[in-house]
Image (cartoon, rainbow, N blue to C red; front, side):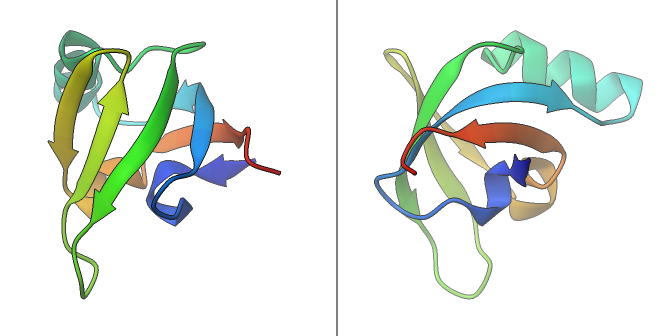
Length: 77
């Protein structure tokens, strides 16, 4: 199992779990991050900066610390 923060630009994955405090879990769910949802990495900022994620037709920018809370199954293998 990998973390969303470990994916590289252009890779695709499916969310397998979210380990976060209740407020962050609800925030991520409201943004569309749910178990079973597929996503792809559009862009990564340098020096462990924000990650641009596409969930269906929605684009979201996440901090690396938030992305490290999202477990994924990589589809690019």
